[in-house]
Length: 352
Image 1: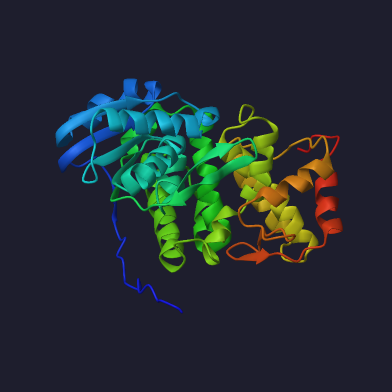
Image 2: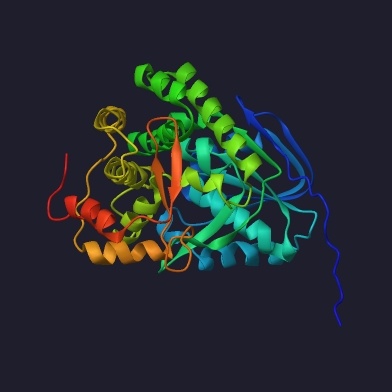
């Protein structure tokens, strides 16, 4: 006997990304703002001046990638239960990518799913992490290996928040902007080569173009079955670097920058990128003082760590490699010897 469970239906998860001075936000429900002590001290008052709701609660969690864990999410959930949040309640993420990922994940599992809103306060989260519905936490095996796709109700990107970012975090966000341009938009990359992203008007342009690029990709591949995986250019290598350094030596965008250089070298060995293009990308990364070097201590262990990447399947590792500037390919048939040759160039000496 076979009984069909007919669940085919269209679910519209569309939402708007608002770029500019933070608008008044009215929510006819109970709201929990999830943030950390640093962001709270800098920006909570500003957000509260724009937010109205039936009730507002503040849940503060520890700052940093090392706290992006199931234990922290459980702390968030316990607070929601203690304050009797229900399925009509809304979570609001005020912070960078770590806060956004954990808030989204908590929203995806609390009573099987509640709405959440992103108010990203770092450049990296404004151009990438806050858009697309990827949520999750890290564990001992790697980055974001536990999570869910859960789209926000809305995203509010206010460049005002960037005024309090330190230089490293600002540059880390620029790495993600460069990533978008290398993979999808040659004209954007050429604009970036001439631009000064410390200029307010130009960074707003860069944010808008990055969000439009990501929106285009996500609209075609929400659950990362194909094209969306290309947004992980630099991340396959970068996530291993983050895990090896226990998330303490580099901020996320810095690891991605190094990972981009490794992916570029792999692309070059596959005949997909010319050396002058490698140098143009490197020059743009160095323009914003992003690292492009890493000393691999154990190349075999580094290679084995690739198998924990979410894009890998069975015994095949998926690498995202640029095809010239403005194009990208997903490759799961690269011979191990070629990859090891790339890793060996980073072993025992720090490249500059």
